Length: 439
Image (cartoon, rainbow, N blue to C red):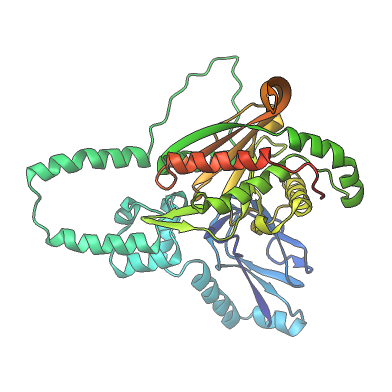
């Protein structure tokens, strides 16, 4: 009997697991290649997984709402369908083999299965195996602080715990002075790990709306970012008159030739990336005590969804795209986001983010850094303003198109001088835009 093992796919470089939010099939259902099998969700995107083969679903190892590591077998599909094979699979020996295979994939140990049933935390098979080998009980495992996504306990966490546990067993009782120092720190760590809930009273006329999964994840991600990164925001006002006049001049010809509408955002993205090459430390990430300077310029652009939620698709290698390329990729990602057609690759790998507050006619904003990046730019609305214009014969007052840019940055990496210099450079590139350039 030929069977195909369906595994949880890789959903981006930083994603290690996904939640099964819906099964479109059940066991013994016949399916064809490209039929929808299930829907999965991460903290970045929801995706439908199609069947890569024709056949019959013989086994589903994980139910709806299960959190599954990347690479785990989630279902078996029988790709051969003759009567003799079906009769063989109904024999006791084959049943035993199937049960054995199911056990090895979904629950290699009964103790591990008990942990899943009694805990809200997810533990990977490797972590469970280490815990079993090292004699770590359930309550002890629950007490380990996780450093993975959603406080998940990683291999490094449990190995570090084992190492420290060994030293703690042989260590002498600490002096009272040491206890006084450690107690507040431990209390602060606990408070940060489990923030207090704010209890809110509800009146008869109030409407209660449960947060959807995406809204909860956005909230958790933003809280984590504020806790991890010391945020600083700098602002500058740029004169974008040349850009406004140039776009007004070429927009009809652009749409006729390229079949795309051009907005101001691709022009702003071009300046953002250009300035980033002058100040590469804003295109970075923090990994513990290491600063990783990114060599790819992958720009995430926040898109508001019809549901009211937010998602950040990524323009990959934006420095290699001209205005036409940036416009087409930006429009493609924005449309895919609103139609719920983004792929995991579309929302992974970002190194810097942009939030367009101007879409809602907001003057400026102070965005929250999209971890693990170290900076995010907010773009305000463009407004006509009276301004002093320097001329060879003296200063005059004229009407100019002005726009605020604000940069939130991680003070662990980007100091005020660097953040301010980078932000000013972006504004300079926008103000020096060549009105005679072609597209």
